[in-house]
Amino acid sequence: MAPGVTPMGRLTGLGLGLGAVAAGALAGVLSRAHATAPETDETYEHVPTHETVVVAEDGTVLHVEVDEPDVPADQTAIGRPSIVISHGYTLSTKAWIFVRRRLVAAGYRVVLWDQRGHGRSGQGARDSYRIETLGRDLKSVIDATCPEGTFALVGHSMGGMTQMGLARLYPTLVRERCVAVAFVATSSGGEGELRVQLGDLLGRAAQRVGPFALAPLTGRQEAVEQARRLARQAEDFFTYRYSFHSPVPPSLLRYAADIIMSTPIEVMHGFLRTLSEHDERQALATFAGIEALVINGADDLMTPPRHSEEIVRLLPGAEHVVLTDAGHLIMLEYPELVTDQILEMLDRAERHADGTPRGRRREVTDLGHSRATLRREQQVRRREQQARRREQVARATEEVGRQARKVRSVTTPITSARSGKDRRES
Image 1 (cartoon, rainbow, N blue to C red):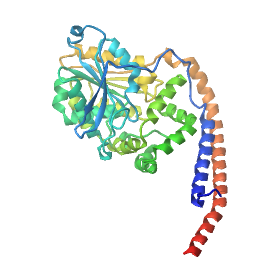
Image 2: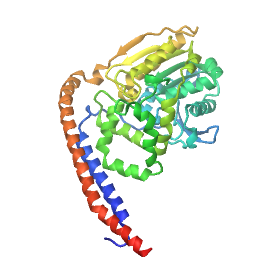
Image 3: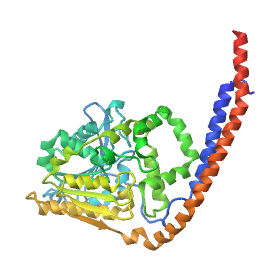
Image 4: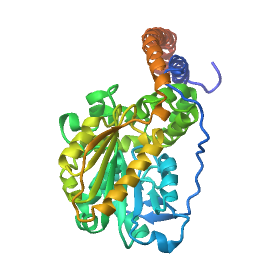
């Protein structure tokens, strides 16, 4: 045994090594389990007009970016609201890179911010990871960046919940100055099937034990980063499964995975319970009479269509758009369609200034993006691959179990010998 290495240290090292082998094996099984599309000429760099920081009520520093339209100021000031965008859980302003470009090109001023614990914002106290606190944060951002005039709210996933929290806490602000609101792949929460779940793989049990399942990794970000390097392919698989549904370029998949996994594990853990337990259904009444858009992917596993259906039920004047062949990150998967719907919402807000919007449900498909022919071929291959993957995963799991038993058989005598030595020395 190497000098200074205890039997327990050796056991820990062997366990970590076994975990690395298991992660690598699983990554190999899953590496090609997602649908890819050809690369495009899209880039993932964006320079905002200016950046600033906003200090929240509790002192947490929030990173804020502002895109100003490249048109004369006197033209944008006439009746055009600023668009305030709030991102979702484990994301950042980067998730809106494609949409923000198109909105500012259309002549709108766009404000984006990183929610506490995400992106470049400060983490804040652990007990501040609540929708109510996020609503107060959004109020601080609006006060600092849109002190006058009208604004429109656009929120994805947890960002949509943040908007509901704002409406509950500051109904007068919303009624007097908000001219339009978009709820993108989000949920108002509730009981039973309206509880926000982490997808069909984790199910209801994950919502009860999820925070406790992540708790052992809290404070061990280095271990998380090491595991991530060992299992990037598995990471891509799960990112694709819970973020997209149509074929996407590999660079977009990696871009999304990098955003998600850059979120500190403490923040991931801290927000899980509030996402599961939040219920902002009553807050939606504040948006009555305001032009509203509810948009979701038909194949979203994180916030399935039933969540959007509930928002529309409680906000009957809302325009409801369902994107077929789309997952949770629809603003990255279908940026043109999402932008078009937001711009149409803003146009309706101008036309329906009397407070009587007309809502209807629509299903929209971008055939050019979803590559229908490729999709059909991949579906056939995927069904065949799924059967093979199940068999491979079962074999890999059996092998990991066999190796674990071997490690235990090797380390048990060492541990026993150490215990005997301790007794003799005492």
